Image (cartoon, rainbow, N blue to C red):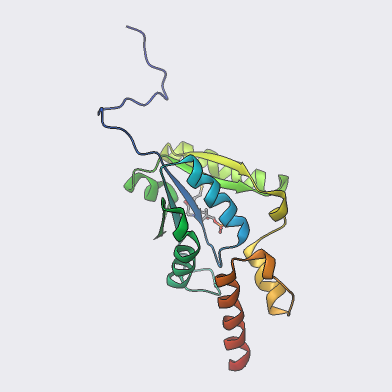
Length: 180
Ligand code: PNS
């Protein structure tokens, strides 16, 4: 009998497997760059779970519930995208939800070192693979942190965010300004 390669998965069932992937992140808030990756992942996989990290030690502009609401709104048309939150290790979340693959966008070479390290670690500790997708060049400079900073100082971020998210960002900034 030919031995199986160490990484070969043995299927215990003849039922068709649903191909699932996770798109993890902070999404504070979701940008057009995130949406580009999520929509491309949704074309490649049967089900995509957008997994929002609950990170109590990091201050955020939007609560996890608000981020989930925004993500649910902007992915509603895809049909095979579900939004969820997780805390702790991403590989534990993937194991508990039978998700074998993480999809990540790479904006530039500067993303690569850290993303490669995380991907190798996630493979090493949890056997979860990572698929890297080059970001659409239109969004290669885009980051939620920059969008928030630019908007805080009155810059125009209209083209960088889905319309509903842009509206929420504007009202959050108005609330903050009114509270000062
Ligand atoms: O949008 P972000 O903040 O760049 O996303 C980073 C995220 C959530 C993907 C990453 O921090 C993560 O997976 N955190 C969960 C904790 C974990 O698994 N850490 C070990 C990584 S090797």
